[in-house]
Amino acid sequence: MEKLFAILHVDSWTEFWWVAFGLFGQLMFTGRFLVQWIASERAKKSVVPVIFWYFSMAGGLILLAYAVYRKDPVFVLGQSLGVFIYARNLWLIRSEGKADA
Image (cartoon, rainbow, N blue to C red; front, side):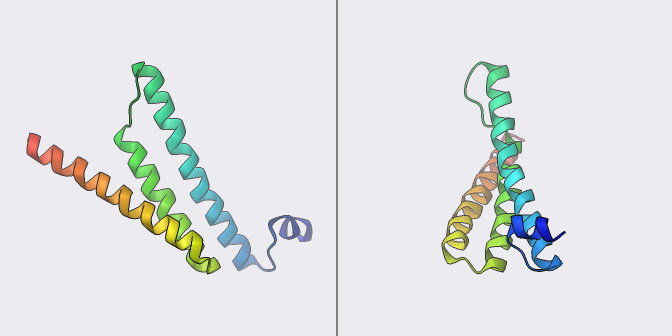
């Protein structure tokens, strides 16, 4: 375990699990691009499926929590803005669906 802790620059299991949580958030962010790319390739045009915004929100919230834990003001500010934008896009999509109904 000492080598793993050294690679991840952590000193405790608490920090290890926070780093694992942060890596999961980054995985969610990567997943959104894969989803968008696959959807666009299938449609043969640029497409942004709704799931892209859910992946964005999940990844953004996880990374925001990680940034707050790490007390990184630059990271907190960047993720806060992103979470606001993702929430707004999901709200607009939901509002559009209600208008169509």
